[in-house]
Amino acid sequence: MATPPEEDNPVLPGDGAPRVTGRASAPSSYPAGRASVGRASVGSSGSSGRAPASGAPRPPSGTAYGPGAAVAKKKRVKPRWGRIALVGTLALVLLIGVFGLGVYLYANSFNSKLDRTDPFSAITGDRPPKIVDGAFNILLLGSDSRDPDAPIDKAGKWRTDTIVLMHVSADHQKAYLVSFPRDLYVHVPQSADGQYGNTMAKLNAAYAWGGLPLMVQTVEGYTGVRIDHVAIIDFAGFKDVVDALGGVDLKVEKTIKSVHKPYRTFKKGTNHMNGTQALDWIRQRYQFPDGDFARIRHQQEFLKAIMDKAVSTGTLANPVKLNNFLNAVVKAVKVDKEFDLVSMALQFRNMNSSNLVFLTSPHLNPQNINGESVVPGDKEKALGLYDAMAKDKVGEWVAANPPSPAPN
Image (cartoon, rainbow, N blue to C red; front, side, top):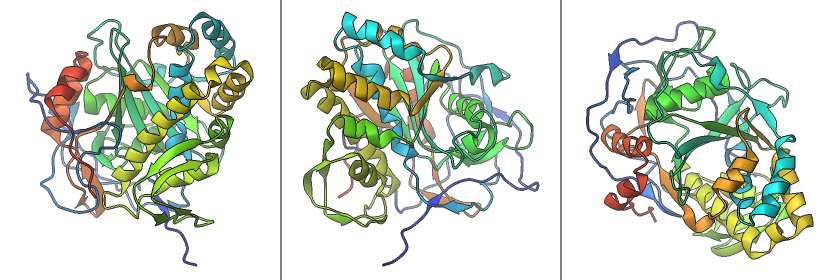
């Protein structure tokens, strides 16, 4: 049997990595554009094609941009589960609001159990302003580390292959989840220690170079949207989250064989999967014409399946089931110091999976830049989306920009 393919992960660049300088500001008005939206849609086809290089979106205050080198030659390690583990955090946030006061009080006990971090205090320089009161944005990261005790606030072994910016509308009736390709070609600011960054690179390099603070800076700089909260989930123990629900039902669009041991076969149609099987399914990308964007699409479908399963099976109404589910999630998650489950429960008390809208950050087809296969952002379309997000008008943007169909 052939050895399963391995994932790409950025490593710290060499001393000779080019640096970039210069500043560019966003236009005063952002045109609308098309991007993926919905349960099973993606942006552009992700496996082939060439398009002119495009600069990254810039925040209203301006950000350093310019020609720069891609990430240095990367170390290759075996795939990890962290890219999909973040769905547990979102499920935790949304689900505890469904049953009102009882779960609200119960959620209070989990605040003390959550592991905490403070990425915002380490950020220097200007940040995007908060424009609309009541609306807020949560950066969700699925990460992975060979060393569970490795710090996440500085350069190190941690990697993140799942990057989602969740925007909650001011009326708390909708949540928009924008998935970013991990290979999105963006400007990464200089790390706090001055050793890395200040160059164009893949988005997930920011986490490897400067931990959570640099990732927050990079996403804020790319979007011009202020991040209010963060949630980071490691893959360890996330299988228990799915198993606590008794598994989930996922649609497989075509029969494929997993590229990872034990090389299980996923048959076309609706498949009931336990934690191990579901995580394996969501990792698949080589068998699909849109590659990594198929993986993003499956992650979005997986999140909705968890939400639907928790509600339909009475998990939220059953104290034992709910306790098992939330305990499994809490063990795998770390949040910022101001993240309050009780407050989230109140704000999300009227929300369920039908209130979730999934998007993919607008992008062009992958291309080779400085010897790296990267995904350039679609500057014009992305500016429209993120300007709408900053102004809490994502619903209007979505209505004006119908989704692109997923490739067959």
